[in-house]
Amino acid sequence: MDETKKYTAVGRRKESVASVRLFPGKGDITVNRRPYEKYFLRETDRIIIKQPLVITNNTDKFDIIANIKGGGLTGQAGALRLGIARILMSIEPQLKDVLRKQGFLTRDPRMKERKKYGLKGARRRFQWTKR
Image 1: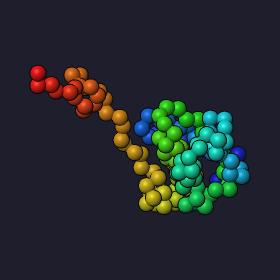
Image 2: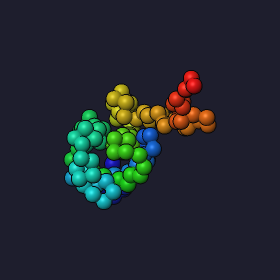
Image 3: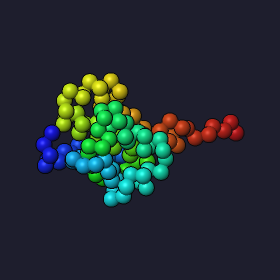
């Protein structure tokens, strides 16, 4: 790995889009100009973000700066995890098998279904009345 180079990737999940930059450092993660502990208050979201780093033993080697837009906090955490996994794979291609086996390189395709005309929502109908 080149010590001066910055690596970038984009991760997406649901409506969330995470633009991730990774460079050599001591393990700091910043999300939207805040430490990730202050941004993601749920412990499960913090665990999701660190999973690719823990599995590849890179928790203290890189600093991560991410800008995330859209969606909820859990979707944003999933988008950030995908972005981090994609960067780690581009740095060290031999990690691809490990990350793929854990499912960190798979983009979650589930999206919100659009509302249809004549219905109350995507599938919900208006209440039927007999009289």
